[in-house]
Length: 181
Image (cartoon, rainbow, N blue to C red):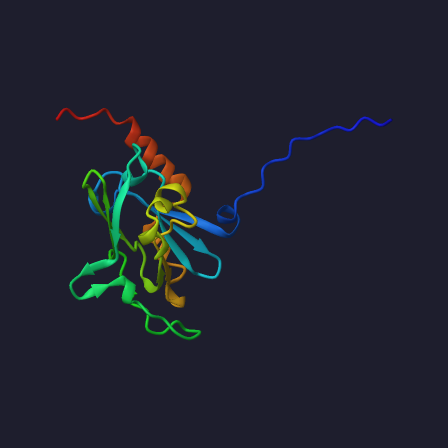
């Protein structure tokens, strides 16, 4: 009988790692650790998620509520797109607020678009099941989907960090001596 040798295979990359490029925005609007992650697909579509270092995903926090009502006159839930060119979607600048998330400790966080483009959809599933945001932030717990303009699709990442650069920022942040209060 021939002896069968079992070779440990490398685990297959996740769908996210296989089809999307991860880009990051660190310390958004000067708020320490309020990091966002943009998953960019080869077809230009970008998915806005929380970076794994965002305070909402730290210290066992629990999400109390999420609202896409940005102001009295602006609700991201009212965004309606139609047709092949996705007409009607709200146009967002890189610092456009997408939603507000309140944790059970009453801390409130505003999540921003991070890139310019047309809002294709917001994730209504996290309104009903906020735990998706914590349990599956890169898949079912995403915040929104944005389509950059074709002519801007190459330059939208200029203000974003690669995963490698983001890891350097986080390492530097973690090595800073804590400031006395």
